[in-house]
Length: 326
Picture 1 (cartoon, rainbow, N blue to C red):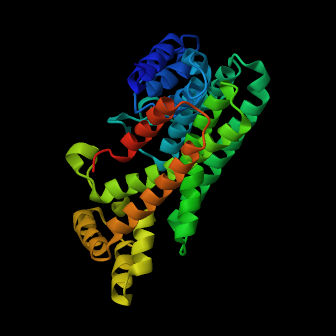
Picture 2: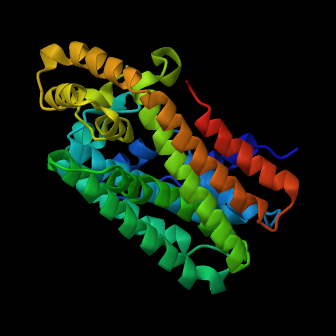
């Protein structure tokens, strides 16, 4: 029986076989360091699952899967620099461990190698379209990151603005990962479209769930202390929906808390803002929007011309991401 764990083992073996071993070590060691930190391997698994909807020889999807994982980690490396983040996945970030210049240059070479691996896809006739797809996704991720940066200082951000930002920054790569897998398998354009839309909508649901868990998740199972987004004054859906639903006095209190940067009052701030969100029924609004996106995503899977057990494998994996650590 084929399982996602089988795919993960296959990808991890490919990753080890293709670790950077060339000189100069100062360029490639930081890339190996970041790739070895692990994570869910969500994006390469989606590429492999997208391929598997149409073909049995999943090993042929590994170059495309490697391309999306390299691109994803490149973006993480540069995001950490922009955020001045000291740790990732419990370990020092690359710029902390190796220095800023090393992180910038290693990230750059990872991006180049993402395209190098993409070019190793067996179906050479698909390569021009696959390269265009990765180009489109890369541009969208950069646009989403810029919007996210802009929102930090923007006085007015709407819910539609936020959803557009996460669609670019998060959902676009999930959609592109599935689409690239389908393209590598030679799937018809209609099926490529349905997989892309399933990934986009699931990506939106995934980020909404992540935002929800950041405030209301169980820290023992989610792996993070609650309220990180609140402490950082991030304008997530939860905050924006709270502003929309708030009475004038509640609106004033929320705005006041989101103007503070005092670390000494961080715990008090998290408690106060969380209480306000609960009073305004924000957890339920968030779950409703998350579920709405996922229901729409399933409509695209229903139209996918693939075997039911293979579609079920993909859907169950997507649901496992949404059901994590409540």
